[in-house]
Image (tube, rainbow, N blue to C red; front, side, top):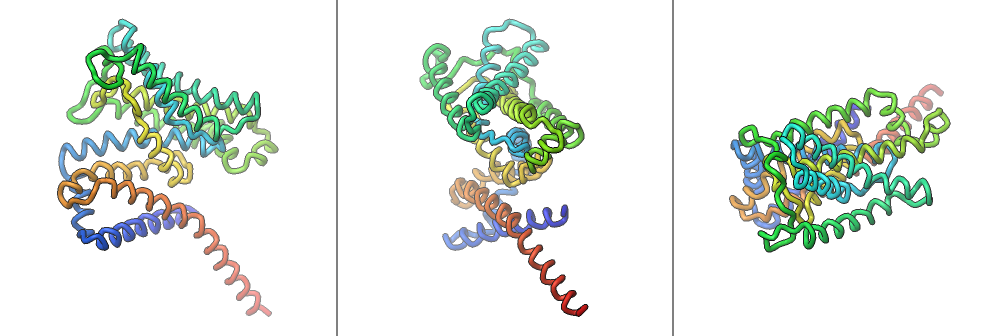
Length: 350
């Protein structure tokens, strides 16, 4: 089973690369030069490697947030709204709580996680109390959070020194240090990701969440409290998204303020990473690496070859479609081959 999954991943990625090469060649570009430029600007320079590592960890946490819910059967598509609420909560603490860094930064991180969890909890309560579909609620709450944050950074919390909607920069005590070109927020997010993977893969609660994601009826009949586990999955997913938002404020390489549309691309990419990983929280690791390499090298490819950086967005979309398609049809193909072999064996035995 594991070999089959690995094969579908390889086939999907190779197919996407081949399709990308054909599209580049059809437009008069050199496919080898374009892909070489992506690798050069994302991996072969100090700045490129640092950008790739920083982006990779943010994408990894975004994917983990989506996989925590989707892998448990909870349709949480509200990572963007939960991220925004987490970022705003961290910003408010960073602006109005006078405290040394050793106290202020943990407070900002915890506030971000709590805000993200509570925003996801609103959707969970909507399903529990009114039977509403969390798929719809979380999507709608993204718009609510987005416009609410836009209002705050345009009027009461707007930085008077800027001409565009943005909050004031948080206190210096609320900003993590950098280790060279690497954002120290990376190490915190890696630690949280490892803890999340351990929770899902090794704990009793994680086992129940995974079973619920595979077959909710089986989980309920087997004695799992599916209602409680649904709340847990939603809250954990929201907390991870809120942490991502907080890190976009306290991180050394970040803007340290809330701006319009903050983190939306990470939220959207996190959903794609989760889907392509089969909503397996441990599997988002490898796809986050792939996405970060493509995105980090996109600008350099445009400078070298003239290919628009949006090509990498299209390549990512093709990769997602290819891997998902191979995953869906490989099982059907393998089952047909097994059935044919058994039929032949029966005919021979007769």
